[in-house]
Length: 166
Image (cartoon, rainbow, N blue to C red):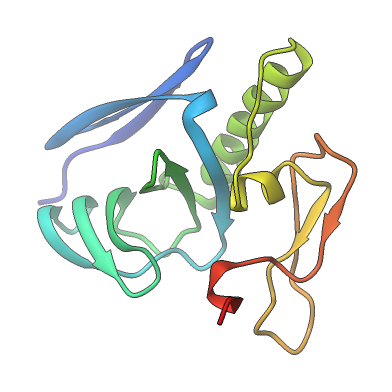
């Protein structure tokens, strides 16, 4: 109940998430459609997996993502939301500082791929992620600007989403 850990290992072209009590997963950097840092974490209802005093692992559901896979500690810390091949993966670490470091390391790996001339395709939110910055506060009375990867010299304001299409 109070045991278990989550670890991430960054490799040359992929990274692996290992979690006690749940299946490990390896994701290729070039399969990441989008990556976001959520300051407030993510809520959800567990469908299957582990929900303990220490860890939240497995399949979860909420109104924002629908069904998603979660690898997080059961703490009030920020998390990283990855969209990979139309699946959502929510990942955290034990502290806010560790989450920020992991987010920055993942961004660095994606930028390195671009510098090395490897193709990077951004579709929809992934394209916006490649920009300098994105105003994600489209329903907010004030802008909420997040830094993009800066691989293309453009800024999006407000965020372009499919729910605007009528």
